[in-house]
Image (cartoon, rainbow, N blue to C red; front, side, top):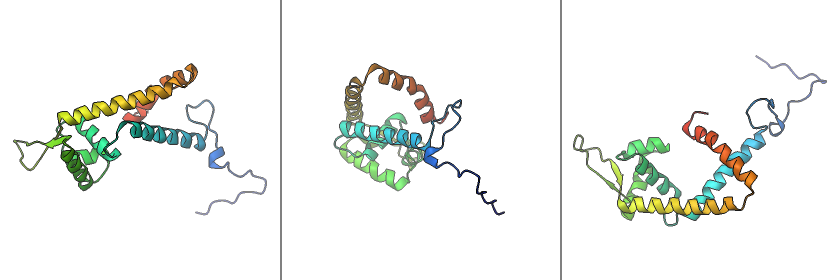
Length: 167
């Protein structure tokens, strides 16, 4: 089917960056606003990580966190959670093992399966990373005015729902 041509009197559609949704809806006003939010979240995450996790890569930190939060998960399960291929996770886990942050355990019911657990050193490192990131973020928030901090605080439940996949 061929789309009808615009008449000469019809207004061209708004550019994506100019598109404004109904003010009564709970949506951001434009694609530019969505891009600003996306970039702000990505850049803030990068800055927190750069101030908090010297010594290991962001991928290694993510896998370590996944192992801690999903105790006894296998390489395949971690790959699924992190949305990466099992060989990539296996390589990352190998690096974390060499650092002494994780170890493979034995599943008595299936010896082919090697659940992963964080070592005390891995747990301690993760705690130090969280503390350093928390400290850096708190220092940045201290530089904002009360209205901005309140706005961020009020946005937290919605951001958490987005992370859980239940907006």
